[in-house]
Amino acid sequence: KRRIIRKGRGSVFSVDDFSDIGSRAAIELILVRLTHRGTIRRIARGLYDYPILDPDIGMISPSVEAIASALAGAGKLRLQPSGAYAANILGLSEQVPMRIVFLTDGASRRILVGGREIILKRTTPKNMSASGRLGGSVIQALRYLGARSIDDNLIVRLRAAIPWEKKAEVLKDATSAPTWIRVLLQQCLAGKGNNE
Image 1 (cartoon, rainbow, N blue to C red):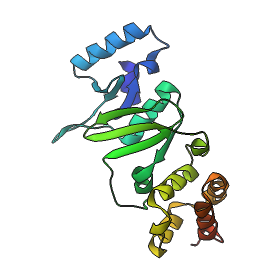
Image 2: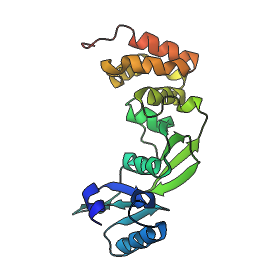
Image 3: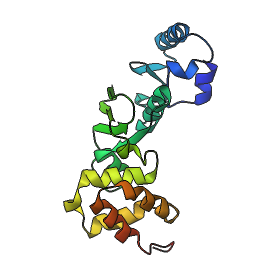
Image 4: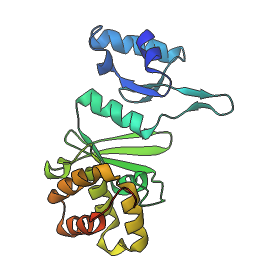
């Protein structure tokens, strides 16, 4: 309980996060007890959170990022935001997806949290080559949006989403992307400086 409280409200965790202090069965039993007492909440099979409490609306659902981090930690997985979610977090799309997709090198999985479906979708090593980096999210967002969606407005948003200090890393990650994405990023980021 002390460790959970130290993590802070809004944190998400699994049984595996406590494997250093007891057997799996003992940890599961303690988490069930803490759930029954209302200290923590079970949000999906094997996942719990220490919820943020709002005086008006009660318990708030944990962030997608906190859930993804817990899922990655539990299975030692790599995760890469994909599809509409990648486009949204980069500001390339205003669409807020109800289905949030992460590519993974682990097993596929679906969980429902607060009316949102979080999907872990197993993919090829090539698609995971830039996982956890801005370049990976940019590539996945552009794949989702497609070449036909590229216009001046999207290019302005794309430039805004890639800080100057990340330019070289994004261009390096783009070497494994489809040709149209690689060419777009090279043109879009060419000469991008601190004042742009």
